[in-house]
Amino acid sequence: MRITQGTFSFLPDLSDAQITKQIQYCLDNGWAVNLEHTDDPHPRNTYWEMWGQPMFDIADAAGIMMELASCRKAFGDRYIRLSAFDSSSGWESVKLSFLVNRPKNEPGFRLRRQEGHGRNMRYTTEPYADAKPEGERYAV
Amino acid sequence: MDAETQTLTGKERYKSGVLKYKQMGYWEPDYEPKDTDLIACFRITPQDGVDPVEAAAAVAGESSTATWTVVWTDRLTAAEKYRAKAYRVDPVPNSSDQYFAYIAYDLDLFEPGSIANLTASIIGNVFGFKPLKGLRLEDMRLPTAFVKTFQGPATGIVVERERLDKFGRPLLGATVKPKLGLSGRNYGRVVYEALKGGLDFTKDDENINSQPFMDWRERFLYCMEAVNKAQAATGEIKGTYLNVTAATMEDMYERAEFAAELGSNIVMIDLVIGWTAIQSMAKWARRNNMILHLHRAGHSTYTRQKNHGVSFRVIAKWARLAGVDHIHAGTVVGKLEGDPATTRGYYDVCRNEFTEKRLENGLFFDQPWASLNKMMPVASGGIHAGQMHQLIDLLGEDVVLQFGGGTIGHPMGIAAGATANRVALECMIMARNEGRDIVNEGPDILNEAAKSCTPLKQALDTWKDVTFNYASTDTPDYAVTATAA
Image 1 (cartoon, helix red, strand yellow):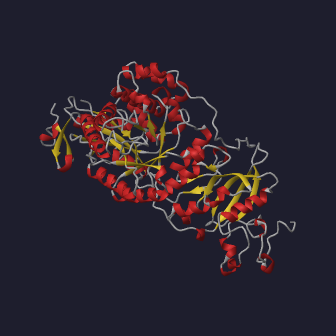
Image 2 (cartoon, rainbow over the protein chains, first blue to last red):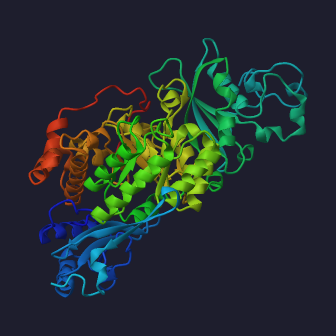
C-alpha cells in the first residue's frame, strides 16, 4: 500500500527539483520549514521525531535541501515529512505538510474490530510495522 | 428640516394618537452610530406614494420599540436609547423604487449570545409590514462587544486541520447519492469506496434522517465501519458527516451521542432546525470535540430574491456566531445560485479575522470577528475535476470541495472518481505553489497529470463540456469604480 498522508501523496513522489519549489513557496510566505521522521505512520501519530528545530532562520531552499539530504542519509528507511509553520496571529499552525521520503516497502495497517453491545464496534488501526521495536521496523 | 420630519419631543410626542415614525424618533439623520451599536442595512421597497425616509423610520420602529400608535408607557423607559434609529437612506443604484436604509440599534436591545433573540427583533414582525412592498436585510455590523458574547465555531478551520492532519489544500468531500433510498449496508459501500479512493469526507444529504428505507442507527454503524476501513487502507484520517437532524432536540442529542460513541469526528445539522437548536448543537460539539457541519437547507427560500428576505451573508454571519464549523457557501461554477463577487463576500465572512467593507462584494460594513474561530466554507453542487483550477482560484484553499455526482458518477466507479478529484486537486495546488498561472494553464496542468492517472483522464473526458452558465439573481448593486492613483 501507499500511505496518503500529506498534501501530495496522490502524485508520483516529488523530485528534488519539485521539493525545492515547494520550499521556496513556503519561504516566500515567511513560514518556517521543519523536517520530521518516523517509523510509526499511524494516522494519529502526531509527534514525529524532529530533525533539529524548525528552520526559522534559513532563508534559501538550497540550505533546507541540504538538511533533507542529511536526514535522508540518517533515516532513509523511514517516513520523512516536510512541513511549513505560519506563526501569524489567527493561524499559528502548519500551512503545508507533505512526505519527502518513504520506506521501500509500506506494509500498511491492520484494522482490528472488537464487537460490543448493540452491534457497536470498537476499531483499532495498527501499523503492521509497529510489531517491531522503533528503529527495526523498516530495515533496509 | 420640515415639521413632518422633525422628531417631536415632550408633551407633543406623547399625545395619544398616531404619529409618523419619523416624528417619533426613529429617523435621526445626524445620528453617529456608536462602536457598540448593531447596524443593519435593509433594502426597502416602499409602497407607491410612501416616502422612503418614513419607510426606513418605520422599519427602525417596528424592529425595535414601536407599535402603530403612541403609548404613554414609553415614558417609563429610557425610550431614546431603546429606539432604533434610521440614520441614512440611499437610493439603490440602477433602481427606481428601492433604497438602502441604515439603522442603528443599541447593544442593550439584545440578549447576549442569542441568535434567536437577535433575529426576533431584526427580522421579526417587520418583514410583513404593509407600507412596504418588500424588505431585505442586506448586511449587519455586529460590534465586538456583541460578537464576544458568542462561542463561535466549535472547532474552527485551524483546529479542524490539525485534527485531520491535512494542510495546504482544500479538503475533498462527496455527498452520498442517491440521497434517498439506499439501505445502511449499501450506503456504507459508497462511503468506503469514496474515502478509500482519496476523499477526506463523505456526507449525508440534508434530507437523510431516519426514513423507512434506512434507520439512522444502521447508517451510523455502517458508515463508521466504512470510515475505519478506509482509514486503515490509506493511513489517513477520514470522516463522514453523520446528519443528526431530527424532530426534537432529544432525538438530535441521542444521535449525536451515538456518533461520538462510535468515534466519528464530525456530525451534521440542517439550517431548518432553527437557530436555538443550532446553538445547542454547537455547544454540544465543543464539549464533545466534534466538528459541526451545517447544511444550509432552506436558505434559498429567503436569500435568493433581492427584493425581499435576508441575504446569505447575514445568515453566514449568524452561523459563525452560533458556532458551526462548516457552512455551504456556494461554488460559483456549479449548479446552484452564486455570483462570483457576491460569493466572495460570503467566503470572507466565513474565514476572515476582520472583514472589510467592500460594496462590490455586497459587504456594507467593516466586521470585526474578535478572535472567533474561522468557519470552513463548503462548495457543493454540480462541480467536477475539470474545474479544479477555477475552484482553487475563486475559493482558495480553506474550503471543502464536494464532488457528489463528480465522484459517484465516474465511469470506472466511485473510488476512481475520488482518485480523479484528489489527483486534480494535488496537481493544481502543486502548480499554484510553484507560481504557475493556474487560471490559464489549468487545463494543461490537468491533462499533464491525467497522463499518469487514468481515472482523471476519464473524468476530464466525461465532464469536459459541463458548465452551468445562468444569470445570477443575487448580484452586488455597486460596481468596482476605478480610483485615481
